[in-house]
Amino acid sequence: MFFFTVPLVAGASGGVSRNLFDYYQGTISKPSHATPAAIVLGMLAGLVAALLFVVAQWATNPAIKELDGAVPNGLNLLIPFELIIGLIAGFTLEAVLTKIQSTDVVNTNPVIGKTS
Image (cartoon, rainbow, N blue to C red; front, side):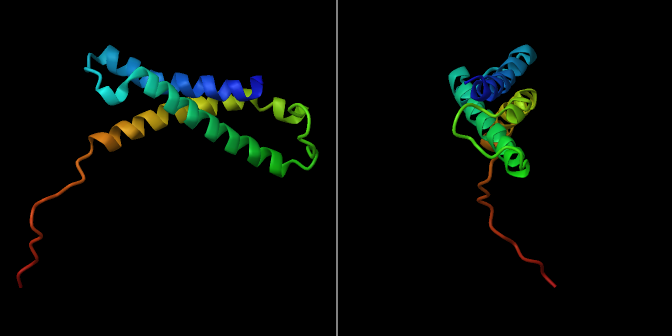
């Protein structure tokens, strides 16, 4: 259970850290930066990134074959890396999503060709 909880908590921490960064800068938080949304998005990003990392490690380690019972000993050694990956994934998702939401992608100006 701890194996899956670490990236969830780390991702949520990374997602909320953007809100803390805005708070300390004195920036008014937008509704899209609501803390519950940042927590959920960070948890999802942290879990997905950590699971992709763990699956890659599991697939390349021939000593770990059975996943029927608890988490094998070799994968338990990856928990500190799950923490780091989950934290970075949560922070990165929140930062990138904020940048995408603030970008104006609609250009209504007419296209003017070159005159020769």
